Every structure is written in structure tokens, then in C-alpha cells.
Image 1 (tube, helix red, strand yellow):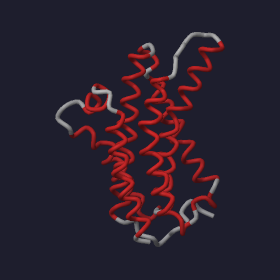
Image 2 (image 1 turned 120 degrees about the vertical axis):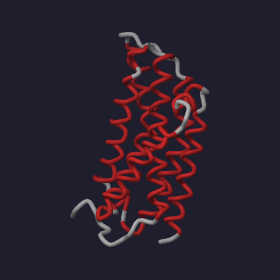
Image 3 (image 1 turned 180 degrees about the vertical axis):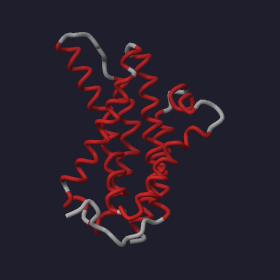
Image 4 (image 1 turned 90 degrees about the horizontal axis):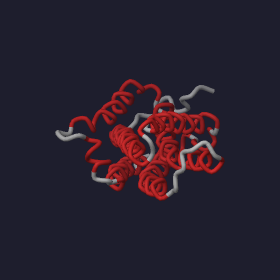
Length: 196
């Protein structure tokens, strides 16, 4: 069985828009975490956000690959909407939870547990994003070129602002803004699920 189980299904415009908004929200969240880590921890912990993003999105893609029964062809639209909604909700929840955790980045048992718990909490939105991205790219593999363009356009979308996009998110301490962008994508994926 190949990665694409739905050879002839055409992704709707809302799938393209939803994918772009998911990737844009993911990058905004990653930039916000990088800035927060450079202030709340030591500046050299800022790289952790990038590592956790890669880890989380890989775990999400592995879920899609190793649990195909969860993502059957007749449930793709519904699963996209569910995971997109979970992604949108998880960003502000995980962001605020991470900020509330006492951090002790020292080489002690408590310090190691605090860093590990922080990494687990902040990886949750990346896992959910990874599921959405992997599901779209594998279930509509015959359109992967256009979907990948939507993916890149979404990620690049935050660069078209006049002011610094990271200032918009992290400088104003607004994790809810990222969640609002994420919630917009739910309407796109929910429309795709209803249109099936």
C-alpha cells in the first residue's frame, strides 16, 4: 500500500487555504517560542524551539504513516477538521502552560525534568500540525506540487507584513493571535469535510 490511498480525489480550495494557514500558524508559533525562550531561559535555548518543531512534525507524520486506520479515505476531511481544530486550540493552551511552568535549566534531576516537560508541552501543537500537513500531502499525492506550493506560501505569508511578524506575535505576547489564525483554517478543513 502506498502513501496515497486516495488517488483520484481532488483537494478543494479550502484544503489549500487550510494547509497554508496551518503552516503559517506553525511558523508563527515557532518564532514566538524562539523569542520567549531567549528571554525566559538563556539565549542559547532558543534553538530548542526549532528542534522541538522538527520533532513534533515528524511524530505527526509518523502517526499518519503508522496508523492508516485512523485516517481512512472516507474520514480524511473529518480528520483534517478535527486535527486542525485541535491544533488551533493547542497553541494558546500549550503556550500559556509552558510560560506557567517553573523552569530550572540546570544539570539536576529537577532541571532535566523541567526542560523535558517543557519540550513535551510545546511539541503538542507541532505534532497536530504534522498530522494535518502529512495527511494532506499523502492523501492528495497527485497534487503534491500545488499543495507544497500552498504549504510554502502559508509559511512565507508571515513575511509579507510591513512590521516584523515575530513582533506581532511574540513582542506583544499574543499566543491567542496565533490561535486565531489557526482557527481560520478549521473553517477551511470543515468545509472540505462537509463538501465530501
